[in-house]
Length: 396
Ligand code: SAH
Ligand code: SF4
Image (cartoon, rainbow, N blue to C red; front, side, top):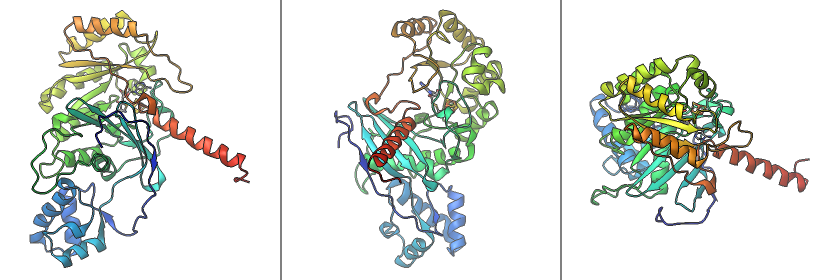
């Protein structure tokens, strides 16, 4: 299916596979972890590195999930692998396709929890927005995810599994011998779904290392963007250990306002955050930092805010672009979206100061695919199912 073609809403439900108990999942292991696991299973030490390389390529380069397909491994070895391991990724529960081609997946992970994944096709590229946690421990006052209780961190396998799931759905695994496809449908990853990625650092790092691995999914570090609310001590680590692009949920220009919108500001304030950001490009050799700025009517959207924002960035000499996000309202949200005129005026001040100031297009509105909207949609679906059952007298 061409993901760019306008398609009407399509919801499907896929029954859940049973998980085989006692077997370890190879998905999400680092190369070293996989090597150790193979040795534990009885693979001779001097073969383990080569076997890891072979299995790695089958899983991440060719998208194989069945050991029987790994034809460069002996039959007996494949059977042994199947006894000890599984190759498993999150299960798609529902998939919706927007009129604009945006795809929203609801995925089920171990324990029955659910996470959202959104695929956004654009001209010549496609971005996958993935989640790092179920819910979030932080309580940003404009974010719906922030009103949900954290259930748990995702494992590295569940994080990279979201990418593998999307490649399945886009039918984008290469076929052996086929020419290399330079224009990928899934060309970029943003860690902008549910959760604070820097509060799940090790798993996010391991998963992104897999995404960047030259013998696997092979995404350049420049095509991966991690968005954080400002966990200052982990920002330098992000540069050193992941090296991807950084987006920062800035959202306010004074500590008083940011303390309310992004409460982690009470722990690390604007000046401390800007200091860490100023060091980031040097440490990671990366390009501009994206400042995300949600436009909230009468709260953070004045001309003075725009000037202060520029002043912060200039004072610290941070290579930056400013991404203005029209607020996505959710039931009970204490804010309103700034008017289009206000957003344009704000963008213009930033642009005049010499910085790119794109206004984020809201995508997939018809399927509630914007930030923080998915969970509410599922909750609504649940409620109505309950209501239906009640009406039918099934829950007595
Ligand atoms: N926890 C990380 C990443 C996930 S949120 C972070 O905060 O950066 C991804 C982006 O969506 C963040 O910039 C977040 O502030 C923004 N966001 C959250 N709720 C939103 C809403 N209702 N409307 C618009 N943007 C929102
Ligand atoms: Fe968590 Fe990010 Fe939402 Fe804040 S904006 S509550 S950090 S997901």
